[in-house]
View 1 (tube, rainbow, N blue to C red):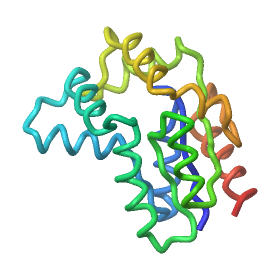
View 2 (view 1 turned 135 degrees about the vertical axis):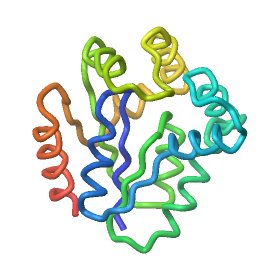
View 3 (view 1 turned 180 degrees about the vertical axis):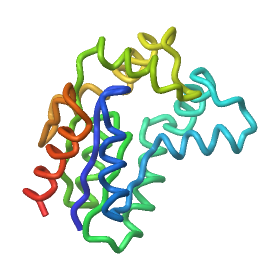
View 4 (view 1 turned 30 degrees about the horizontal axis):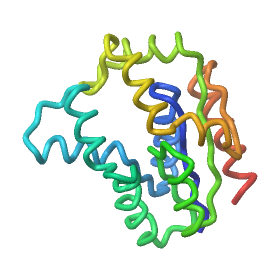
Amino acid sequence: MILFVIVGMPASGKNIARNYAESRQIPYFATGDVVREEVKRQGLESNAENTALVSTQLRGADGMGVTRLVLSHVMGSKSPVIFMEGIRSLQEVGLIREKANCVVVAFVAPRALRLARIMSRGRSDDSPDAFDDRDMREIAYGAAVPVALADEYILNTRSMDDALDDLDKIVKNHV
């Protein structure tokens, strides 16, 4: 099994990897999905504040609780290629590398472009007003380190098709 670990700041284009994986029937596991499901399970309104609160709760004292949960699902998959997204620290990458052969792929995009995406995509857990706070929370989690130390990069400033092509080249290079 090879596990592609998708990292990046909010609205950098990580969802392109989900589209890529789903179009090829490759399993895709995301910590954010677990967080959103937990917000719903707790009967909370799906908004930026509640999502941040539940995310912090699920991460736990060492910051890796939700990663352990998702990684257990990943390890139960029999697929030769798997995608995992939502990793926000070097410690999480280390935990994953202990369990699986992985390639860390970072999506990067300029801050202004990421903000424009937040404003246009209309997700209930997004808030343009909370953009700076969200970035700082992600950085506090350690999200910048896996991006800085990634194995592969996609500069996501062009079209979605261009980013999909870049990702396809990376996958084919490692599979």
